[in-house]
Length: 405
Picture 1 (spheres, rainbow, N blue to C red):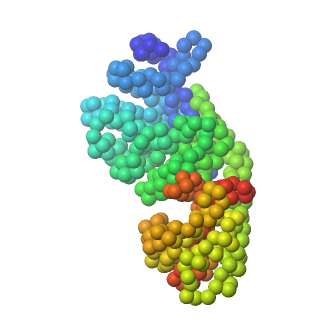
Picture 2 (spheres, rainbow, N blue to C red):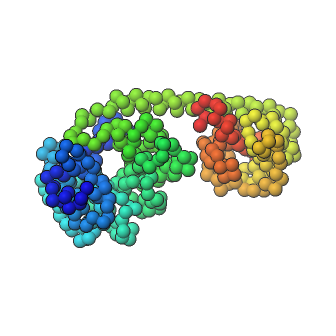
Picture 3 (cartoon, rainbow, N blue to C red):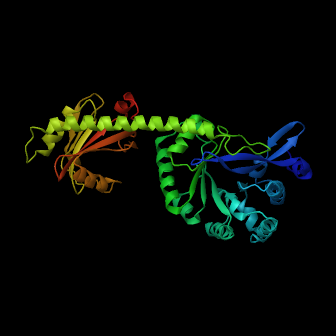
């Protein structure tokens, strides 16, 4: 595909529209405008054209503006109230301080285009200037009433502090790069952090390139407000009824909710089982405890469930060593672990307070153990108001049970 051929044959360049669906109403809330080029009877994507930095900037800008003009005029003529997502290269905007771009956008506003219905998609990781320059562009765009989306997160290495600094209205997470559609534990943790950050800065999460059911499920669990991808709707030259995907999404959401309900029930059942067995294990133990003997005793009683047991006080200081099950299935005891402090861990203080207040144990979320490098859960249980036993449950046990991973 020769770049000059495309520029010289703009009559063959036109937009396609890919629907973006809201999680709350299950309706199409807007469309991303994507460039297409007709060669004979074949229609091809212009993504490689825009991504090729060897193509002169003026060529790319000319074609970008041509596509946007067609889309904007369609929205104006049809008086559409959808959001229109326009991909722009911030490097091209700032070449003249943004004057040309902003003058062009104001011309559409004068014709009746509502800025609040426009979303500009920027790729921060492709911006060549200083981050403060991009921040200035975003602030100016937002002051005009136009929304800004940071695009391709998941593909790029954009840091959370940079996202917070740029303060977009929408954060787009790309799932396409994930090989065989698996979701590694570290990626889940990173997405959780991104979800928390988005809530704090008031940005909405949009998951794009959703190509199958499992990816939609993953996006739903991560708090996505918007969905986009071939699983729901492919780019097309026209528009769809707002409720086109409502029935599909409602069925999928119902499946997700049923599955999550089963997971919660399984976690409650495991929690109750551990509480009952610990109560039995502690029934005849008298204070003051020999911490090491108590730890070994609990480990022995629960060896079918746990691979590591230790006891901490309310300040987070470990009062015992670690009872650890080795690869041969024998318990080893590590006295040297005594006096480690775990209060720095997320949720430690909250869990201690909850256990004291509720007088019951707490089962953690899945997380990656720093020693075993596998996904585990930890069950913590109050021995008394000052001592708490921590029971680490291996992935192998969780995998054998339904709905625990």
